[in-house]
Length: 183
Ligand code: 5GP
Image (cartoon, rainbow, N blue to C red; front, top):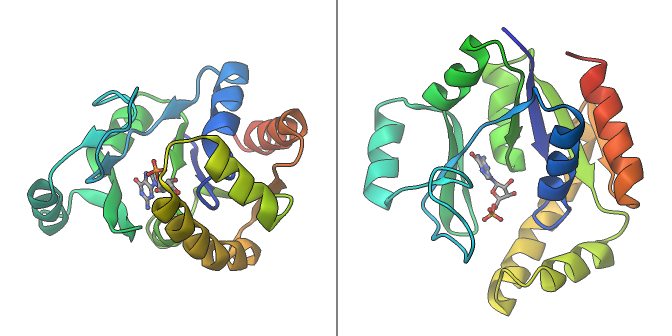
C-alpha cells in the first residue's frame, strides 16, 4: 500500500497551511477529505474541504463501520472514511490525513505502517494568536479549542516525528524531508 501520512497537532498550529505547502512541493500527495458534523465556514466547499454530513448520517456510518477512525472534537464529530482512503491508495497515491490526536491514536492501531507527524507551536501564546488571527472561530470556540490543545500538546511525545511550526518555510522543509524519506 502506498504511504499514509497522518499529520496531527492542536487546532490553529498551522497544519492546513503546512500541508498546502507540502502538496505544492509533492503534487503526487493526495489529501483525504474527512467527514464532519460541523457546519461549513464561509468559503468552505462541500466535498473539497469536508464531506459535511448530519449527526444522523455520521452515526449511521459509524454503525456501518465506514470509518478508519473518528473522534469527537469541540462538540462535533470528525472522521476518515475508509472509501476515501482506499480511493487514493488503490490508485497508487500516497495520502495525507489531517486529523486530531485521538484519531491519530486510532490510526496507529489500525494502520501501523502509517507515518505519524505531530506539528507543535513554538509556544502556547503563538497558538492563541493564530486561533484569534485566522478569524474563523468565535471567542467561545477559541477557548474550547485552547483547552483541548493543552491535552493535545501533552501527546507530542507519542509521535514518531515532531515538527515545530516556528518559521513556516523551515517547518515545511522538515515535513517535506520526513515525507520524502518515507515514500
Ligand atoms: P476544524 O473544525 O478546525 O476544521 O477541525 C478541528 C479539528 O479536527 C482539527 O484538529 C482537524 O485536524 C481535526 N480533523 C479534521 N478531520 C478529521 C478527521 O477525519 N478525523 C479526526 N480525528 N480529526 C479530524
